[in-house]
Length: 184
Image 1 (cartoon, rainbow, N blue to C red):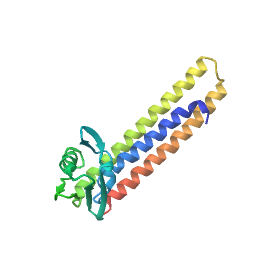
Image 2: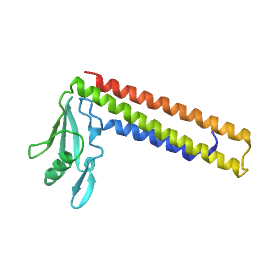
Image 3: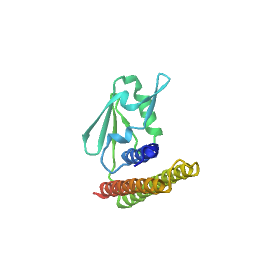
């Protein structure tokens, strides 16, 4: 692939990584500490990532235990978890916070699977938009007489192959996440 298309290849990678991190926030019926990655807690007037304030353990398959380094932050951590979109009510025992994940019903699993497919489609749309921007840049290079028609074809074909690989990776990620969610 032509080095002038590298910024677009970087965008493809970022789109896929964003999808993967997005999938980490989806509950699959098992406790996954990654769902807490996007939670920030107001701590002494500063928004602080939850992971920097406490230790996070998974003692059982459906339980996460959060033990803050500073016990005075328990209320703020609990408030931040309640305000997040993870959909689990924290239990504060004065020393730690427990998150108990309920078993998912079949209907809820199907809803989550639809959401996963939608997020995968949104990522594919983003990748197609990146492809369009790359092809537009190649057209501008042609218009400015910087490259020949043969170079245009090879650049477009090379980038299209790259896009096809990313779409396959997205399909694979979506399929794996749906399998994980549907597993009882």
